[in-house]
Length: 145
Image 1 (tube, rainbow, N blue to C red):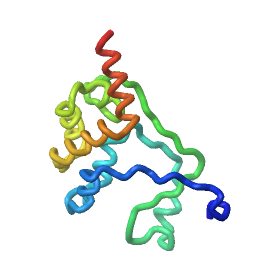
Image 2: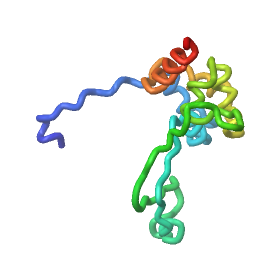
Image 3: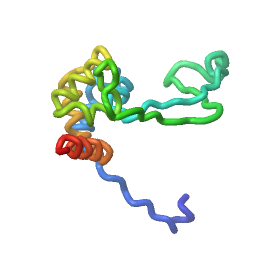
Image 4: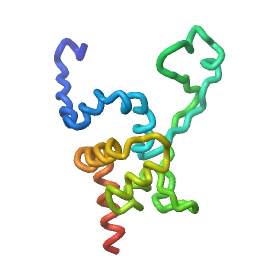
């Protein structure tokens, strides 16, 4: 690997302990995809191969997988609120002024999420995620104008 150790990959930063503790929470683990989705900055689009829904040699028990045929894209959309007024994806960081508002928006996206867990993840994102920090900074610039 790595050209016989000629290439050194720097170690990644350790995950915050608060985040690691969530992985011991059975309810969090059952809904981990839903939590991931409500914190996504974009939605993903792809041309899926239909063969996986028919081919049982590929599609069995376990983690759901899909095969992409063609292209994959990420849709960020407008950062301004939609007609419905509900913030989605990166809009949450721009349109919702504080953690309580962001958590409320995310609670409305999917049923069954734990408010305390959403608050923990929001705090982690605000402290450690450079993309969340950029969107929050963009919001502060917009508010100043």
